[in-house]
Length: 590
Ligand code: ADP
Ligand code: ADP
Image 1 (spheres, helix red, strand yellow):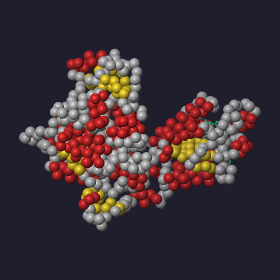
Image 2 (cartoon, rainbow, N blue to C red; image 1 turned 90 degrees about the vertical axis):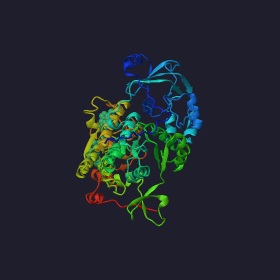
Image 3 (cartoon, rainbow, N blue to C red; image 1 turned 180 degrees about the vertical axis):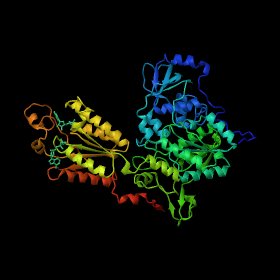
Image 4 (cartoon, rainbow, N blue to C red; image 1 turned 135 degrees about the vertical axis):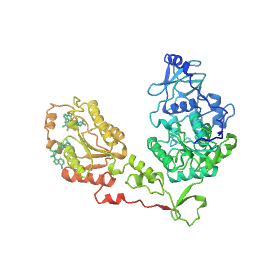
């Protein structure tokens, strides 16, 4: 669609877009030079920051901050030249012989791709407590950035950047637009008002409602601008999120009114300061409005269970700077659903007697996805429900590891074999990793010294964790005598998917069984380091299940473990299958 009038979008902050790329005719020469330089590998966060700097998303900032910019940003939310800038963008490094003033330093990715050359102009120490207090207003380690900062280098370095290439992305390439590319697409859409929407979550109906209301109010287009760099640990991964955004943008918005573009932003979860930063960044992409709702860029709750920032602190903050920054704010109070009227409304507008409905992120995971319940249509579009259901299968399709530990002859293999058959009957895919069998292939050649035993257990743990990750059941039966190694495996598999079964058979019973004649050999001294005789067995401290093989049969014990798996939802009875398919009930709150 051709538009005859020329659209002029809001100019970038500071007047022009920053562009730190080396020109094509110098590229070979600078690359050759860079290959001779000492180099550092950037963290994922610094990699995102470098990309944002290089493409002009942080304009007018064109480099990692020097000491003057840094201090003024902490104290006054401004760069040394007075421009608004609320978040410190620094390159922290550890001191070392390569960190020298007036020397070039090559910046590489974790995979050693050469990305940029920095001429080091400043090296300065920074104070973690000061940054935590001023930027995040807290020292609480529950704030993900306050914790992360403990791992950062002690010195910040700054200087001109010559960028050779951007970090490589192979996913969703067509959606990764630079500010320049975004502007050119927006210009083609024919509206001066561009309202940006920042997000780090899958989009539901309530978000759709916010964005559509904002567009209507301003007669503008929507820049749907999800952060895909780093978000809060534990967030839904960006592959899943972007699939939801693509579907929504193509099916539920007018094509010429929405532009979906992925932002390589590493979020700081700094609440109010972060919201202002988001506004500044979106101006560089051509947006003159930003939607700010409830709990913008929130890090959740602190170690006392209190929110780090008030739900509308970010709105107040952005409002204060809005005129100077040139980016208007579209504020929203919390929107809730009114089931009786079939529509969304801001909570302040809802009559006190009305029934409202909402579903929290935790409820989405625990009550709906884990139980295989479909999210209701008033809450999310069916296509989005489908994508979320696909990437978060219900518990009975998630992987799980059942780990048997105990002395040789305790009854691990015998019980594990019965359990395997019972779980096959429940329709699960099961792999049995028996220590003795594993030692004939995967761990062939390993001995019984401490180190080899640990290696064997780690190998079993690695295979089990891969099986679990892909939705299978791994049943492992190995003496696994050492507590720390078992806990390591628990960590590899994931706490929620790990069930430790302690086969608590007394030593004398194991010895009297002596199925393989090993105890007798050990007693005669023909084998050394035999568990229970001359090598320790460390019993588990808090196993999920303890079984008694003296009082109960292998079958009884296997059924007990089945009950635990049923209880946790990893398997389900035939009768519960219909129930799970039924439409979910609306949870009413008021
Ligand atoms: P592990 O794998 O712990 O070394 P096995 O399962 O190979 O032990 O050997 C256990 C031996 O004890 C088998 O010969 C089994 O028949 C016998 N046994 C007797 N009662 C039980 C029981 N209740 N549970 C498991 N095994 C039992
Ligand atoms: P782990 O590697 O934790 O010891 P595995 O189940 O892989 O556990 O191996 C233990 C099995 O190998 C035991 O059931 C035992 O029958 C056999 N075995 C052979 N030699 C020894 C030994 N010196 N010490 C312990 N188990 C031995």
